[in-house]
Length: 387
Image 1 (cartoon, rainbow, N blue to C red):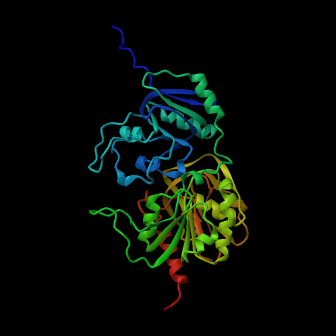
Image 2: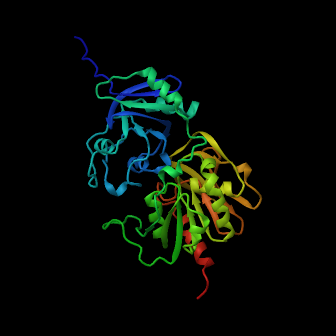
Image 3: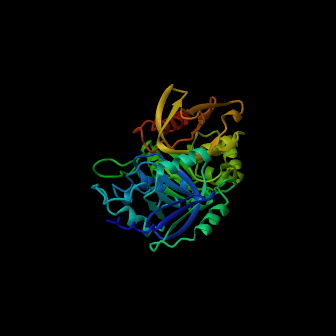
């Protein structure tokens, strides 16, 4: 008896080195070209796809069961997905979660994002770890018609993320106020009505839950675009300044962001940065950043806090890192990755200015890193005049 014919592949992933993976497409149709990274998180695929730090990247998920809890509007970190696409092991099944309002397939299709299932993601992840984050072309055609040679050439033609400023592409168009706090059972997101600390958040690609954590820590938050000047920030008379996460090469964004941060440092305000904001602060202080081989992307990254001696389980998403050896005198390394020893935090000695590489709002530990928001609030309280 002859075996049943295998269905024709409807998706194709072409790497710049000529390697090709075939699978089953879902979500939007078409072609997208980007850098490929892998993420080891077991939950949070919707938050990952809407994280602006993933601009210019296709995400391979090492956890096989992606899509099993569906999607819902409350879990979006921005209005629309920012990651270019996704690659998964198994095709998404029907969602099984009381909060689900839409399947992952329909959610991606409506938002123009291409996805691909049926891929040996372990093999793909090993290739990324051994060779670095490759440039790829991801195609979805329901009829299975692919010009593989053209896709490989498209991947080879991708310029990459080095030297590219993506913060301008994902930042807010204009300033706005934020008072929504972290989700709480059973009512959802409460509103901060009596915030004692006035904070300006510079948006290099901020996630909503970061702003919620600031509000939950007692901050009245005003969000300004990435291109805001020091004068525009200080015009709000803030008690502190927050530097958000974001995508792209920090050196490229730093051409306009670093001079602003250097002026804000002269104002002697408490300052807290994360992810790209951490890298911006480091550059403003005279340190350097470097492109990593395959970056850190996941929700299980152990980081040691030298200030407390504790280890926290963190959420990571970055392809560039601060060179810890380049930190100038007066700036100390406060956090370090226990995976590879890379820098994960800095602080100016004897000043309320600090930053971390990980995303402390993501709560994978589940709340190992929230103390950073409380530390920021405490630094503003300590600077406040006694009434």
